[in-house]
Image (cartoon, rainbow, N blue to C red):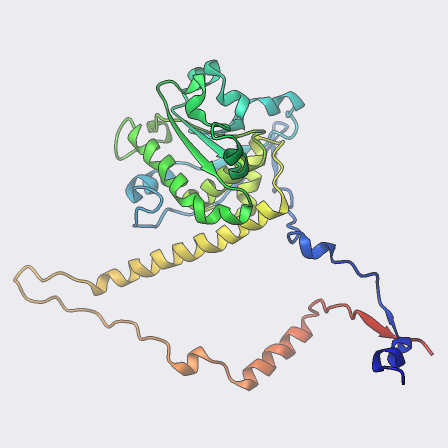
Length: 324
């Protein structure tokens, strides 16, 4: 007696060729070009950031970072019309105090001295470091004499977010220590300069620079990529790296929302009045009740109907009926 699969296999045909290749790849991230304005033939664009609102020291001293962000605007000239292939061997200033480039410039004492670099940060492969401990270690470079160094090791981009916070904090603490005056009133009050590099200066180090822009200056992931690429046109971020930046954007947004909520709640922690009496506390916002937390079945059905009406892309059936 024929099995059920054998008796029904001739009633269906595959709708399309099957491949599991996409299951092994990161979701594609499309990065559209920035909106450019042309001034005297030079492409320029502006990036909107957010004020630094955190009060914790997880990324450095919050007062220094708040002043740093407030005194800098992102009006950038794009290098796409002037970029030349040989420029990939040089380092470019993404911010007045933050450079991005390959390991060859980090090894160059002349460049480090002439550019005023005070901190070398190497973004390295953990696998390469396990094979050779001195791999891209800036402390072993002749150019690092008398200046600070830092290494940031990770293999897969998925490890990046969990490891990047101490690196950003170290960079900011170094910059604060080099300030000509505090609080700073101008971006040029920051005397220190940081060079972030990897082997090519195009992937791991570019990812770190983009993350720094997102965390400190509050720019979105796509805008951070635009900023880095506008100055170093040869960067090559993989889809894995772009997805990491999108995940980091979600995390930084949540951190900012928590900081805003903490600022709103500060009036509820009030000191005593000048006469010694207890200060009057305003009414604390009420918590959500269970009716607000859960939606009814009718609301869920209405939500599904609205999704259907908006022409959401539907999936493709893996099999179709054989035509009569």
